[in-house]
Amino acid sequence: MRQSIIDKDGYEKRCGICALGRLSPDGESVLCPKKGITDINGICRRYRYDPLKRVPRKEAKLPSYNKEDFEL
Image (tube, rainbow, N blue to C red; front, side, top):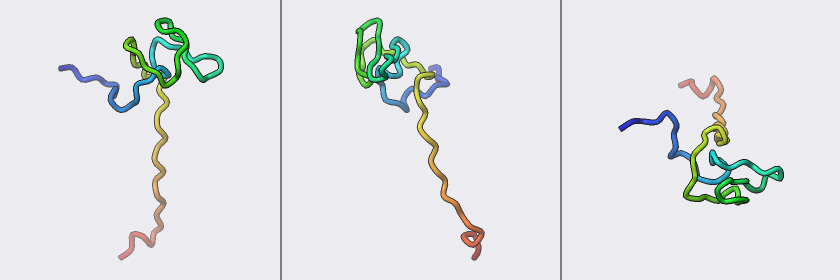
């Protein structure tokens, strides 16, 4: 079994990140050559993951510590 470099399980499948679809000029729908105009959150059986279209989650903000927090 071959492992993939791309984590395909850590995202939600939707037309907005499909390799086939293109975002419309208004930014509210996807222009798909297979299904026509679809919703960004829609999904069809011809879905193919495109890692370059996915927007990564923001990093968690780390808490700030003082020197006094580390004294006994």
